[in-house]
Image (cartoon, rainbow, N blue to C red; front, side):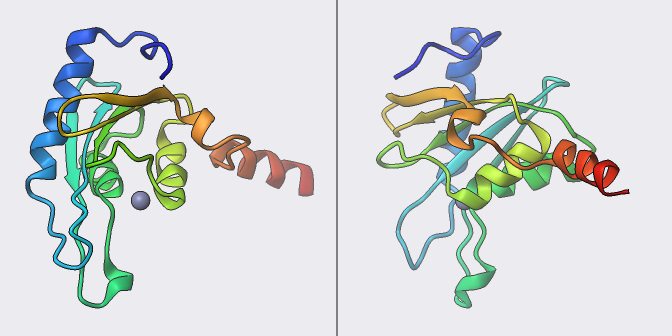
Length: 146
Ligand SMILES: [Zn+2]
């Protein structure tokens, strides 16, 4: 486990984990039985929650982290500060979710926890997605190519 993310108070961390745990209760997981809850903090101080939603046509399934991210963006949020993710085993987000989070929060904090509130890992998203490709790289590449 790492040091608590910069600028995150213990109370805020606990609130995010609690919100993620609550969102996890709404997970729709008839196929995997692996509920995931996420709570995303933006730079405005708002928190958006999400759960995973599985669809019988599996490709339409969406993770809890992306549900939270897309809810935030659809409400006008563009800067992510932190996300708490609760799973039965405190697992890390999948690669697709790491990429989505990187788009809006390359320096954001990630907190992984179990339903008992045990933090299994905490650190910057850049540790989960080193050398991430985002809007900056795309813009820089376009300039270099012109
Ligand atoms: Zn995912």
